[in-house]
Image (cartoon, rainbow, N blue to C red; front, side, top):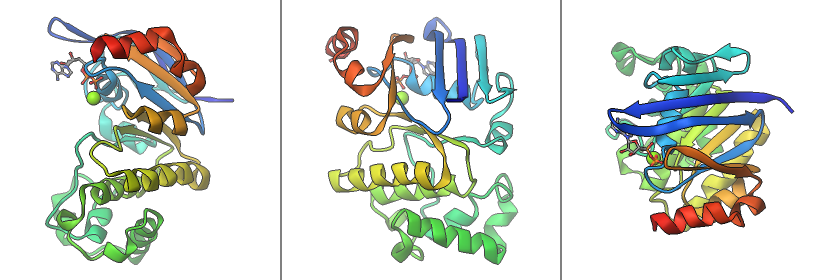
Length: 247
Ligand code: ADP
Ligand code: MG
């Protein structure tokens, strides 16, 4: 097994709040790995630190052989490490294909490209990935007219446009109805199988994460509380207490 992401003793504070304290974890290449923990336990902060959203106050983060700490988000994205958000980030007044086209690395950052034409290959890739997530028939609809769950699928497809090696997904199933949740889980698995993408997933739906991930890390109060395969985490008394305590 190969480690694709290594978090070593990472510390992140906001004023007096210690959001991550001495967090160390390894994510195996090709795995689906989960990150759980009660609200406010520092999960999103850790993802933000990994993708260079903000500088960390201590520790190191490695992506393969490359040290990430102190690199900026666009550079990290070009290395193949991307995240999606708790809130979707799509352009509601553009159709799905156009959202996909502007999600490509070359289109990023350039307002001009929103209005320009795209190479045929980009459009074909966009349509192929829309088909992959089950949105091909909606391709010409405005993204804002999709259901919330469909918007999440679109956002996932937009991330795939960049051909990432690893995707960080922050609560991908939040606010989605059960039918679409199953569809999304199925697509995540297939993305790993077909494209070899490593997935690191924050999820507070226990049924989803226990079913999806091979390895799970649990944070509480900014610190790593437990790690292990789902069956171990599920029966870990410290994990159970952390959730009950936060409930
Ligand atoms: P989770 O995603 O596990 O719910 P977060 O990482 O969002 O937790 O938050 C961890 C802690 O850090 C919380 O106490 C939160 O209020 C604090 N925090 C997160 N982001 C910021 C920020 N930008 N400024 C100040 N405090 C923050
Ligand atoms: Mg969060």
